[in-house]
Amino acid sequence: MTGLPAITGRAWVVGDDVDTDILAPGAYMRGPVEDLARHCMEAVRPDFAANVATGDIVVAGRNFGMGSSREQAAQALRILGVGCVLAPSFGGIFYRNAFNLGLPALVCDHGGRIADGDRLVVDPTAGRVTDETAGIEMDSDAVPGHLAAIVTAGGLIPYLKARFQGAS
Image 1 (cartoon, helix red, strand yellow):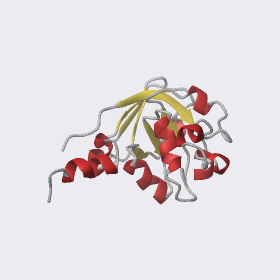
Image 2 (cartoon, one colour):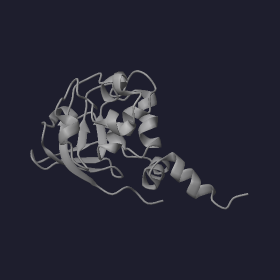
Image 3 (cartoon, helix red, strand yellow):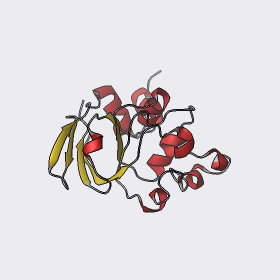
Image 4 (cartoon, one colour):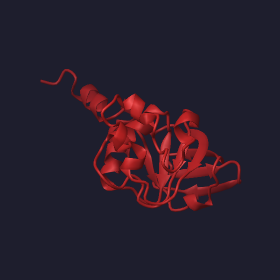
């Protein structure tokens, strides 16, 4: 099994307890998920959805993605091009939804050393975070092989389709 490639992008720092309603605001749940994504994190980072670039990295505090089980929270981040999320802890359902939708979520206890806008390189296979702006390296949990395979496939559904294609 091969690992995941390095993810390079700008850090978007948010605090503790960013819940799924902040990631996928309930007021926009009735429309298409692409419209919902335009409101992702507007309560804590009004500039986020309009300015996040493909590969950028959300650096969060404790309990990122806590709250309800809405998978649109992880889906909105994917639609916006977020490369991965770093946090010391995640809401359990968000953590699994992230991987099921192809978004790496890495446990990293040292994210408080990262400043907003820093240029990061995350090696999810080795569990290594390099802050090129500050010139520091930090450990994170590595993404296990079975979850890396799901991310590589683009999420759980594409992974399962490929795995069981042709099986009777």
